[in-house]
Length: 108
Image 1 (tube, rainbow, N blue to C red):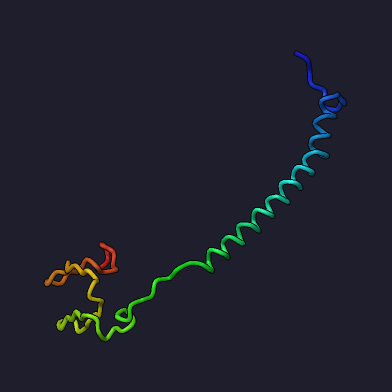
Image 2: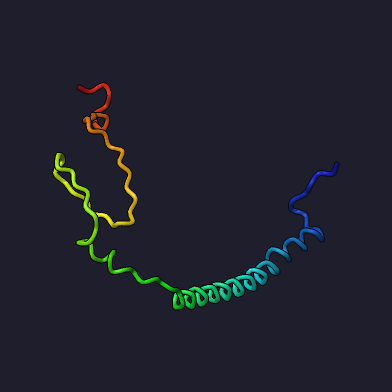
């Protein structure tokens, strides 16, 4: 096997230099220009889509919380208002628990 001489100029080293220093910059410039055009087209499409989007009107019921249902907890001293179509599940326990404590297991 022949030993590679890195400081010797050959026909393929000239070809590699030509590709790296001459062709790559032109190809990069070409792709950059087309990429910029694609970005501009995407911005225009997004702007056109934003102008034609439909937002359904919000029923007045949702803007007037005085008509909502109220869930009161007299023992806790609070109440929560919620719309009629809100599905609430009751998973609380009437007996108090201490598993919400921030103290670690080893602290008193």
